[in-house]
Image (cartoon, rainbow, N blue to C red; front, top):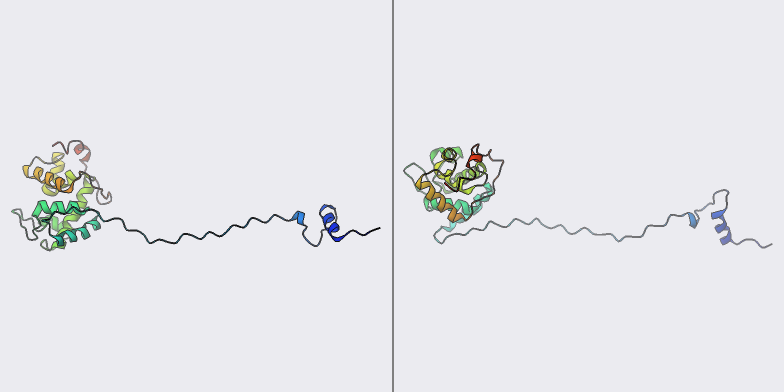
Amino acid sequence: MPRPSKDTSRRNACCQVGGPPTYVPDCMREPEPPRVAAVKPPPRRAPVAPPAPVVVARPSWPLPIVNMVKTIAPEYKVHPQLVLSVIQTESNFDTVALSPKNAKGLMQLIPETAARFGVRNAYDAQQNVRGGTAYLQWLLAYYQGDVTLAAAAYNAGEGAVDRYRGVPPYAETRAYVRKVIDLFGAYFHPFDAGVVEPSPRLSAIKGVALSR
């Protein structure tokens, strides 16, 4: 009687009941997973800086002051165009301007406002711009981005704006606000809500600020 071949013995080992074979039969092996080519992660890209705010400078605006404002204003999250609009309206870019109310420098800081925002020398252009821009940042947060109210308060004080529930009925302040808005070109400015709580009169002001 012929003896079974080795291949036949292996096939039978898969199907016969008995002691385990000394190797893993083909029919009991798990199929190997398909090989997937390794995917290389995309190369890291350097972070892209946000585009610089667009400033529409007038020919009469001194370039050194414009460039200084373009550097300082973003530190306070205020658009340089708004700061330059206030400077134009306040002092016409005169670094040593002095008003009858003792407001000084480019952004015409009165002594109380200068002290409030840490300005020691209001005739120092950088200190003056930093103080005035910090005040604008505060006003924008206080009036939740309403440029009309912020400009009115910069000129007449936030107390007057709150008291009159909008732009005070002063000819000077109304002309001031119109000029700032014309130069800035917008009625709203993004604001940092963490700077200060909004005006407690804001709900009463809204809806009437632009009509006064």
